[in-house]
Each structure stands twice: as structure tokens, then as C-alpha cells.
Length: 83
Image (cartoon, rainbow, N blue to C red):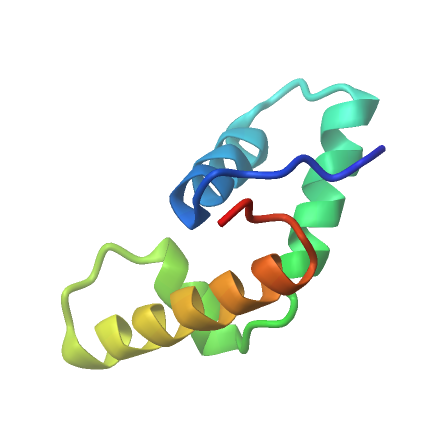
């Protein structure tokens, strides 16, 4: 399955969260979710946790910003982000 291109990092993350939340995903969706998780694997554990957190704590916010920056660079380098 070919990784789709996204117009923004927010679109990528929204699709990832939707696939992750889907209870009865088909083989194609599971394959795409696995590919997306491999892309997210470039992040450190604390960065991945910060992306999932709604916390406004300064340390979590710094990790979230760092994660978004790193992920945006990685997705652009791999052609997953259009811009």
C-alpha cells in the first residue's frame, strides 16, 4: 500500500488518530496504521507521549513542539507532506 500524501501535519495526525481509534479496521487500514507508526518511531518516547497528551505543563508542551518539528521534517523528507 502506498503511503498517502497529506496537506498538513495536522491532517496526518488526525488520520493517524482516526485509524488508531477504529475498532474494526480492515487489512488495508491496519497496514496504513503500521506504516504511520513506523514514521512516528523517529520520535523519542517522551515526544510520542506529549503528542498524545492534552497537558499544558511546560515540559510536556516543549516535548510536543519538538515532536511536531521533528515529525514535520521527517514527513517532508519522505514525501508524506505536500508542503
